[in-house]
Length: 183
Image (cartoon, rainbow, N blue to C red; front, side, top):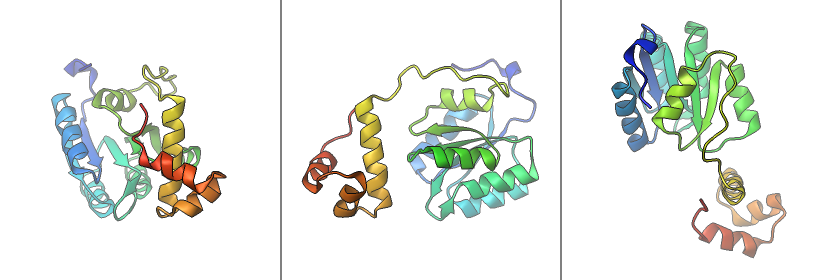
């Protein structure tokens, strides 16, 4: 869904802060093809530096980066350029981080994997407009699997601690972790 050139604002500068190189490069190419002028960063430090030197009109920021929290970039960018439209991406979505992202100045919060059309729609959405429901929502099994993976990650990949926090038998958790993710 590539939008016509005239629907884009005059300032089409876009900063992408993402530590996953293939995703960052693919997204940069896709957004350039849609008419944006893209700058990229792979760490919080690089994102902060790029935001200070040339505050973009748009930004796509990963929440969890190798050297810290992407919300630091969102907060700085919102302070420098309050009209910047920032979308936060994350593989570990929850309500608390979504609320924090909006408080720091993000206009939307998307779970990974998000495609370029979804990101562009979020960046160019009318303020105050209601989003369309997702065309392909995650299945209940996938939501459960994502939650288990997030808790497992937060517990430092400790199966016993994860099982305790999820109120689940350890062997049951091990079987779930050994399987592929559901669709």
